[in-house]
Length: 458
Image (tube, rainbow, N blue to C red; front, side, top):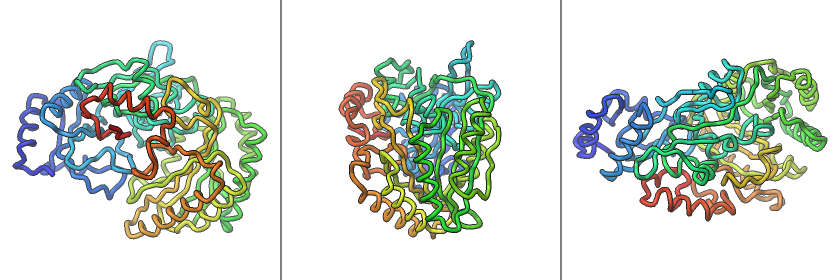
């Protein structure tokens, strides 16, 4: 931990005097705790300092200084890592959130964004132009971090994963140079994120879309076990018949003020709302609906709706597993564990479906889980820290139950963004792309300047 007499801080402050545009905070600064705060409240890390660059050249200057003085570097985009990856003890935190612009090309087919932009701000800018891009559902999540490590979300059946929409990136390399990523590096960025250096700018595909059809469908959950069984089985029947690419359904369970609920987030990513309404009718018929908030909306408006389903910050973490299909065995295990879910604010369960264009092998990306599957999130982010132990015990029991199912239904890889350190190997997560990843890391970070950037491979 850096103290006011730490010679590293003395040198850093002297360096920053020559870069007055770079805002910063040290442990004795009045704004340090506010800048240190991330989504997870119980991260004990005390960084050496937090710096707020304003552009790519500032980031390069900071990397030059850190490299010359032996400082470890960690990068924050949104600050929503559930495992503290963006706020590391005794490290120099490069907080990218002031680099948050959006620029469209003349044909409005590409958007170039700053490395610190969050999902909601990007959605707002694109909505003004009648545009959309692949993105997640929580507006305060950093867009670059979300997309480069994979990027599950409501557009994945028709646009692909977040990483599939990246067409360009500017990176500060290990020599502290601002470079345009070539196709080889882009392949690594599409799945391994900032492992090769801070991504100060990224260009992504955008699509014409004025309004979506979206919202929440909440089912009668008096008997939540029966509801979870019925809705999940019914959705699998719809899936077997074939689902249109604009449709995305996210099943989840959480504790509301009036008790535990089983619900769906419904998303129709097309301006053809007549067809969307027809599918809404089919999906709502899967259970006994007590509330349906699905309406025509903008993309930005939909993200604001989804924000109400998660706390703004919390204590705790997450467990995950990816399964090939919602078999009767999987449905039963999931439904029973939803029934056992603690009645504590924040504890929840969610399922993300990967299908369509996302779920096929791609040579230009090292994201490995390229087959149809469900990515399961067992979420133990609680509002009251005293509830954490009960939530964690439930999550471990849930995970143990899932591991007892037919092993052929379990993917070896898990989603790196929600995989707890040590709970799965990078060999499993990246599969056949693991050795190429190691080669990329040795080539583009030979000195280990970015050793703290996930995936932390040597």
